[in-house]
Image 1 (cartoon, rainbow, N blue to C red):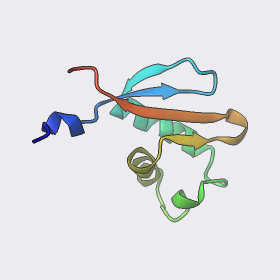
Image 2: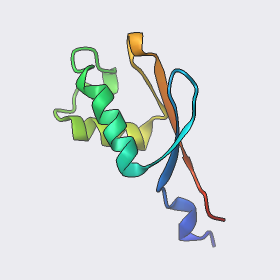
Image 3: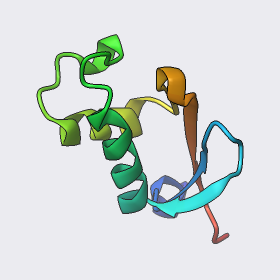
Length: 85
């Protein structure tokens, strides 16, 4: 039986367009995505357009995607990582 630790997501690696990877916690990732989405409300990806609030959009991205095309700001990517074995 797999350990429940396998499904615990608390650390992410973020690759901004300049490709300087950053390790962030989930709250830090949420803040980063929130800040990106604030400027994109008129040009949201189709799967986010039906969500009314930015926190809802952030949660959808974290649960269903691993990148966000921000137009002129480039594409941001994020992946769950486990730092403990």
